[in-house]
Image (cartoon, rainbow, N blue to C red; front, top):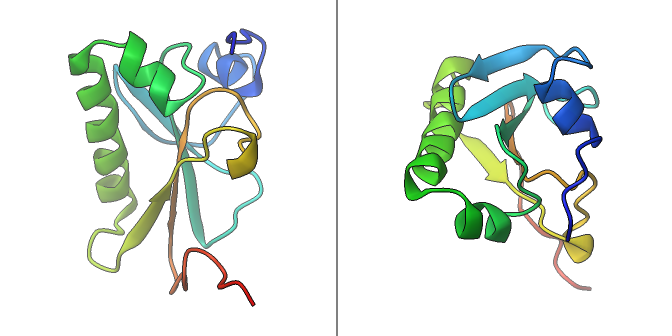
Length: 121
């Protein structure tokens, strides 16, 4: 899949669209979701043109990949959710319902989150 430089997250990274920042470093930008699915719902996006986890791991340096995931952990720490607990989620591809084709990780917290997937039945 070809990266679209005009996707909403690329535009946020360039400062064309404002966001409510939660954390930022050389590897990532974290910001509050405009349609939160939990009391705490933050998106963490890498500062690079990566569409998926596979793309990130195949094309970014190991130092960048590590720096990105350290930024995810630092964001959770900054949000104050380490003790109560949090969930991280990354949707990759159509079956996972990835809406923006810029790799990103969701951090959910602030209440008991329940099971990940509904049981068939």
